[in-house]
Length: 489
Ligand code: FUL
Image (cartoon, rainbow, N blue to C red; front, side, top):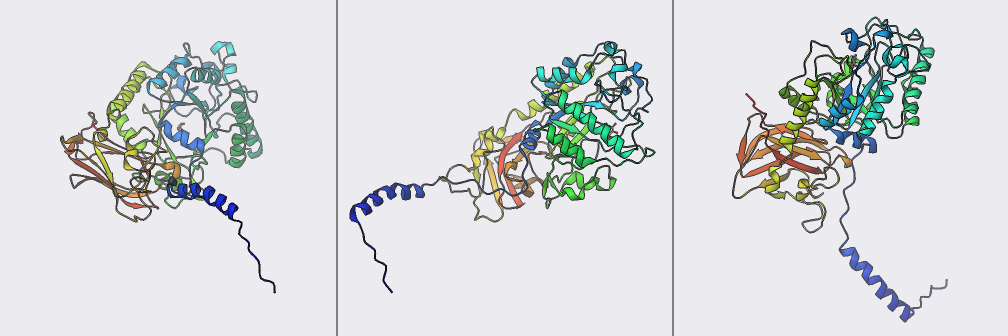
């Protein structure tokens, strides 16, 4: 057999040598890449939703005029008569609270529609308001857009007025027809709310959720669908606005169903083994009821802050209901409370005492000069895509520490955020001040707030230990804050 014959052409070799050289050099100073994600990951719209932190709900309809929470469906549309309806005032109230998304009850359980639906006459079209020519949904959308905010809509599946309810095919057709109206007539809608509530004596009804969800996604590309079961945002399992102290954005969607009381604990805490990204939304009203009642007043600031720490501070979005009154305005007491609430949040979080500190960590991806993943990243303004990453060689006992030499730092709130764009990872963490443990917890997620049970602490060093994590933990932001409204006693 003939041997292969190699011939070497000297000039070609020289050219190859000189051209290859820069490439092999550059290989030595290669920029360190981000770590691999841990699935599941949020979608683009879910990430956007999460960063809103507080969104606003508006329950408005015939109940506003009858002093009730669940209408019977037999209300005469003539009672709907807001004499001074001003949706721009609603949007101003939301903006004053730093809210970027407002969700209106286009139809509640009573079946009365705030827009002139062509599929029913049980709507604003039969009310004296604007002589039957008004459209609250349109006015709401216009005001929200004019303010640079986003809009969402609630369309109650349970309908106590429409005779088609209980006739499965007919009612699903009706419901889908209304969804099509709402999602094609009014431009971009960022969230649609499918409520699971239904009275005990309501007729049996199978909702065609798959048809509804598919239709929603067909008509709106950047929308999130909320329901007990997602698919984009899940209910947190209560109406107090409280998430679990453990709260995963991951869950197994196959274990969820709508209107199923037995899964509320699962909804409240999520599932570390969950294969779906379905973060929780905490709905609660600023007043006792969802609808406006003359006799009710807004919750106190301390109650709202408690809700904030237990919702946004536990990896969730807070959906705060602020019901317009029978004039068609957000009551002045609520407007003032919202401003106070926003003012308090800004006071607490606008100063980060960690910024004055040296930052060190147990290790860092790519080494100290490897670039990109050092612990200082937790002090910049990007709370998603710049983060501290330890080395992959480190397997446990990850820590990041903030130190000051001259003056003790005094604080009572610790904020920790994970780089959730690469998956939610942290299972257990602890916080130490000068070597003494001051707080511990399980999940972190987008944002975890510890309002210290012991009140104000001071010290020269604050160490956050990540005790358990899926893969390496990725921390995008840390804050040490002072909350003047917090008094643990
Ligand atoms: C519940 C409803 O029954 C309430 O009336 C309210 O709309 C609340 C947000 O959801 O399930």
